[in-house]
Image (cartoon, rainbow, N blue to C red; front, side):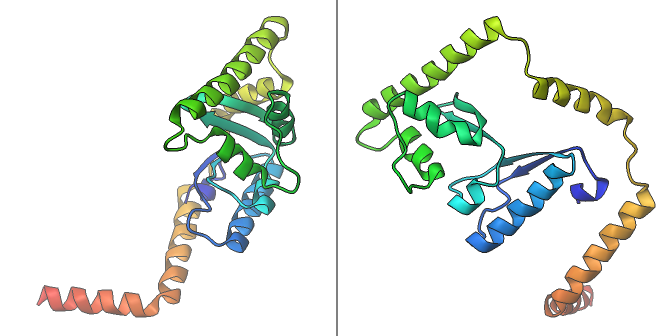
Length: 191
């Protein structure tokens, strides 16, 4: 229902969870279309297939509560390779990141040391770049966009209501038997 209000910022928490790869790709393509039309879309995706992963522009990798990488999706493997963790050829980059940053039972100490090295290297890079450079143009644009969100006109309540009513009607028609059972249950319980 948040899409109906045409938000500039959309946060999708695991929108592909429980979907097969074809459906997941369709969801991501729809979100990408929103992003291409000027919306900011932030997603959490766990273990995406390669074809889904490659549709994203930016990547944030978090391990043990710390940032391991934040930047363009194409730069992630190069950053890990500089640290001595090259991605094997023809390997799903998302799986590579997961395996590299995962804490494996029985190897906790080794894995935590690797994660610490990666997150420390990222932090050191950020501190070094932050001391010599100003904010990126993209972050300035994002700040201006968020500032302007409060001045943006939303869809009228009647338009939103009409869309929600239509969606509810279409859902009820698709699940006609469920609606019938619910109606019978209500009638039986009322008597």
